Structures are given as structure tokens and as C-alpha cells.
Length: 253
Length: 253
Image (cartoon, rainbow over all chains, first blue to last red; front, top):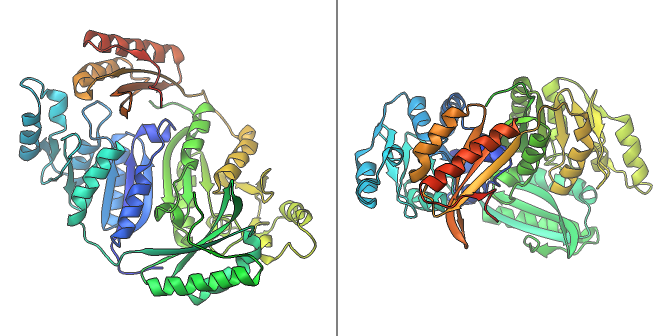
């Protein structure tokens, strides 16, 4: 399914994801929020805290998609290097941002707005701020790159403050049907035929394994709800014809 | 920290991750297992079920890292296209794999090894099998690309059967210390100085927010346990000097 919706990618920056220390949950949050706004997420990458890698990846992705969302690396410690790398990617100075500086200075007791914290108010020239209602230090947007924190609740708050400014498209909707006891290999042929009839719908087939039973969920995604419902009705009929009881929606978690 | 350890990347293939339907947990599993074996995970990517994207990405990544691990897209349905795309990436025929075919045919009742299931026994010429003790249909290795299932318990079983064949390096170890009540901005300067003294150690600073309290965990990663312990001892001393009580290890979940 290709359409004229804006495209996006997510760039997760942080050794802690690639070492397995931390389970990323930012990608899924952003994926769901972007889909609701009709923005097509076409790629996600996870890269380490290496300047040359960050710079090259930011430049590759911003040239290829309408929007890039980065998470991670904008705190005050030595391993927080996203902001200066984004400046280097855009070829602009990395300098104190007057508004960010004023906000942050005002939030600390005298003498506590130290050099490390001042780094969080230092941004690529031309950046506009993304509010951080949780911990004050802002994210920022430069060009089509939106730079956000890695801590999930801060990133989520930043995204909500950024979202009204994003260009959108037709929201990507989903409909689903599932059945217990189905093997994918039994429905694959019929499902493929339905997919061919509905080229404007993405039909995904997802086996599930639950204490309440195993089966397969079929999810239809696309921008036309009526088409999704028609495709899912055909899948339900396929399930029934093969002797499985179709149940609307995804299986309970 | 750069060393002579083999490098790897993980390629997650599946619309369901980019739509936010599914929370990926395969990356973290692989990240941890690779670190234990001394294999440096240098990138992860998530891409959609689009043939040209899969082919180009497989070729880019296999040229750049010692090992590529793919997850997803090797089932029997129309959206399972990883196997044929990997064949195209290598420029080899996609054809029945005799051993996979024999194993799978033997596992079904007569007549049930249908065309959809036969696709799971169709592989790039030259592939060697990765056993699947859970659901029988094998993964495979071709060149330096290891193609595995997306369902986590199947992927995990496949990785365990593959692991003894992987080249390894010096295991990447970790040591940690944390303290409650610390703000990153208070320790950043001292932590940066410690990092400069230990260029062979990766020092990561990770704020945490728990019902039992907020604070910061410092994690040292590297191949020399004694160096990790020395670096962490210095961080503990830094915490103490600033009036925070250092606690060995990561905070409880």
C-alpha cells in the first residue's frame, strides 16, 4: 500500500538498546501515534553513541523521509551527544539557545545551572523548541528532524507537545479478525487471494500463542475503513468455510 | 570502545512492528545473547515487507558487518517474503531445499504439505538449515546472513541452535552502580572525567524512575572485567563524595 501520506522514520540513539540493557518501548509508541495521524513510518534504526554514525545516519534519513524522530542522547552526561551531532549533520553551529537557556536557568537554584546542564540548552543554530513538561530540558526541531529524549515518559510528553505542528495525512486504520485453532498453512492460499482482490489494503497474518489457545489473527491496515471491513469480512468467511469460528478483532492479550 | 570482536546487525522485517501493532522483543534478546558471545551489535533496523527494501537492506548490511540476523517473514502466508528476497539479494535461485522439504513433508499428514507450506521449505540455493525445535519449519543461513522466525519463542530456539556455529570474541561484560536521589547534572562533570581515564570502558548514565525512588544508574561495559570494576569503584566514590549512597549493581526492576 503506497499513498501520498507523509513518511517518517524513527532513529533510536543509544548503546543501551544495542547492548540489550534496555528494552526499547519508544518505537512502538511513536509507530502508533504516527499511524493515528496518517504519517507512514517506513523505517526504524537503532544506532550507537558514535558521532560519525549519528551524523551520517541523520543525514541519510532526513534526505529520504519527510520526518525523522530521534530518541535518546540529549541529557547532560558525556554519552549524550545527539544534539551536537545533529548540528554537525546540518552544518550549523552548536550554540546556546536563548529560550532554552532562559527556561532552564530559571528552573535551577543559583549556581546549579552548571556546565553539564548548560549543554542541554545548547542546540543547533535555528532549532525550535519541543516542550518538556516532565523535566523541563526541551527537545528541539531543526529542518525535518525532531530530537527527543530517550526516557519514555519524557519522550511521550515531548511528542504530544510536538504533534499539533506535524503535517498529517489520512489516518491509517486497522480492522482485525482471529480464530482459535487455525494454522497459517491452512489459510495461506485463500488469504493470498483476498490480498490480491484488495491491493489498497495491507493484510497481515500473525500467529498467536496464548494460555487460552493458539490461533491466527489477520489484521487489515489502510486508509479506507470500508475497504478494511470488506476485506476482513472475506477473511472471516474464509475462516468459517474451513471450519474455524471467526472472532472480530485481535485476540485478548 | 572498538576492538577486534566480530560485528553484527539485526534486521527486523515486518509491517507489524512499524505499525505499532507488535512490540518487538527479539532485538533485546539477540543483543544480550550476542554480547555474551563477544559479538558487537553495531546496528538494528526495522523495515517493512517490501521486496526492494528487503533486498537492498540485506545487501547493505551483509557487506558492512560480519553477521546479519534477520527476524520475521518466513511463514507460509503472502506477507512472508523474506526468504525469496534473501535469495534475490544473493543473486541465487530460490528453490526447494531437499533436507527442509523432507523434514517438513514428514511432519504433515498426507495431503497437508500444501503449496503454502512448501514455500517454507523453499530457500536460497546454498542455504544451510537452522533447526526449529518448536514448529519444525527451519530457518537458514546463507553467507553471513542468518534468517530466523519473528515469533519470539521460535526465534529464540532457532538462535540457540545456531549459536554454537557463530564465531565469537571476548564476551562483553558489565558492571553497574546506582544511587537514589542523584541528578545526572550533578555527576556529569565527574563522570566525564572518569570516562576519560577509562577509554577502554563504555560508561553509560541512565536515569531511572521507580516507585521506590528516582536516581541514576551507571553501567560500565567492556571486555576487561578488572577495568570495569575499577571504573565503577571510581563512580561509587564520586557518588559518595557528592553525598549520595552508592549501591552496587542496577536498581531492582
